[in-house]
Length: 171
Image (cartoon, rainbow, N blue to C red; front, top):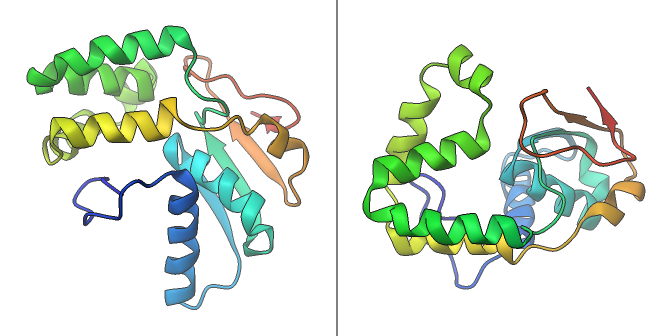
């Protein structure tokens, strides 16, 4: 929901709705079980899916995935980042820097433009809703990690902003 050019969804929504939507897409295409790989919000969605529909996942790969709601420091940074929404290019650069390491940005030259273009499709109110639901109102999923019934791998680079918690294997 509210991602790129996706259509409007019911309000309010949360990451559990995103997990349900993944299962609906799988059902539509006749996919019983799959290996899921998610970056950031995608990884957060997969963790919810692993908790609710573990039989649908043969394994999960998590890249730069937060496992807890934003702390007070992050909430403060989001407050100021929201003030930058009037200057959408500056806002996009702050989001980019939070999501991607300098090395990733160097090695994937089109990611900055792609992110900026997609953020421009969304209004400031939509962006605030996404950040609130994904970063501020989310639940702590650290406990889910120890109960996973499928292989899981968290991929973190030295420059990543989000540390991988135990007991997930990390590379």
